[in-house]
Structure formats: structure tokens, C-alpha cells
Length: 90
Image (tube, rainbow, N blue to C red; front, side):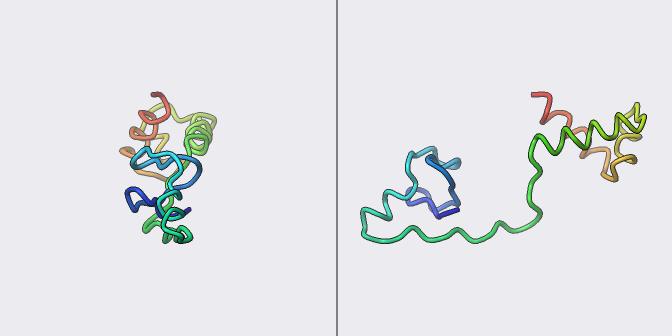
């Protein structure tokens, strides 16, 4: 992860996810500088959609029929289960 030369937010790959500019390192390279490394993100790392699906599938396999039962089976808040379901179903 580097600091995007366009918007100064963390970026990886060929396109900045925050501002959408291609080649986030270009402004740094044009100034004759190396792109600085982005500091690690604060807080918990977010889960990937695949990991969320795996956890929800584990709750279903444990026999959870309701949101509350699923939350109890995987050890999260029912609001988190609802948010995850909305995220992976879209």
C-alpha cells in the first residue's frame, strides 16, 4: 500500500479505490520521489466477502434459523449478521 499521489489516501494496485485515478504513484514519480508507504489502517481489519459467507454458512450448518440464532452461533451481534447478509446478498 502506498499513499495516492492524487488524493493522499492509501492505495494499492493500478487504480486508487478512493479517488479512482489510474496509477496512484504517478504524481510521486513525476516529482522524482518514491511513493511513501501508507500507514497501517487503524481499528480492526475488515472481513472479505468470502470470509463473511463462510461464517454465515457455518451458522446455517449449525442449525441457526433466525438472525439471533446465527449471531449466537458465530459469536457476533445480531446487527452484524443483518449487515453481513445485506453486504453479501447485493
